[in-house]
Length: 342
Image 1 (cartoon, rainbow, N blue to C red):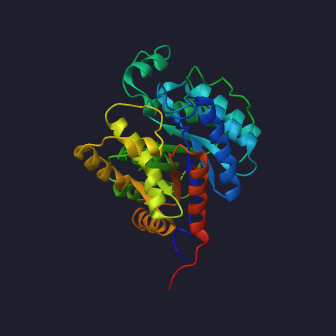
Image 2: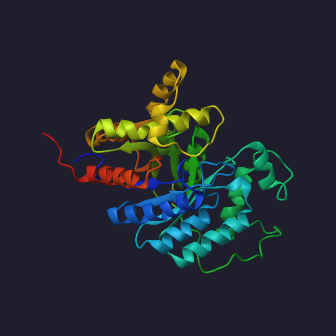
Image 3: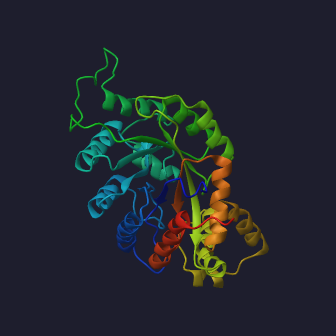
């Protein structure tokens, strides 16, 4: 058996807006994709929090997770993630306890420390919460966990506040990261870790292996569980996958220049006047994107599993056509049942 046949596969979907589509359609496509990957047997689907980005339709992962859970029957759903600096920990606890109460055992609470937006929008999100512009993620995380456990200092003013529903625990916690900080913190407090290789600059092996080496068991998690998030575009042939991935290439190029336009179609990407510097950037960025037919993608996934020792793979496929996206997830899932060549 290959490692790929043994690890869970999951999905990250950001409700990307296509250049030939609309925001509402992007939201509906996420729900439809969730139904599809639920039927295929994927482990979980996460939705993210981004703000002031024309390319992303949803900044509300709790609402989207609830809609996904209502529309599906088995798959786990959650946040990948809630950007904790933007929110009151009490409100996060309330919303995710409600989700866990409605859909017990199917909810994940992934947390990030970045604002998920630009500086001005971050100020607009936070200005009525906290005047301190510093990084208070750790304080907010401790407070969120205290709302769940009730383990406040004896003189803390919040110790008598109850988070409803009181007879529901928070769902499993995950820390998201694109650097070594969240890997170390996840290991220290004994929770799951999800590494965003699809956009991270930090060395993936350092993050994934240091989390595993330093993990301390906790009441929340007895053994380390590291999710590796990867960008993947899979199609029946390498050539078709390359055509579809033109959308990913141009979108990444625009983001590198500070643009966040809706995701271009493959036709728009093919017609774009790339400079030689653009092509160099795309070739370098392809180190973070697996593109190809099933055989090529399988080789890439196995390589990542062998080197990172990931316990789970989370696939992000940011192509605008829903049918092609669904087919990509079908092909990737089918790799787990593919026979191993002698």
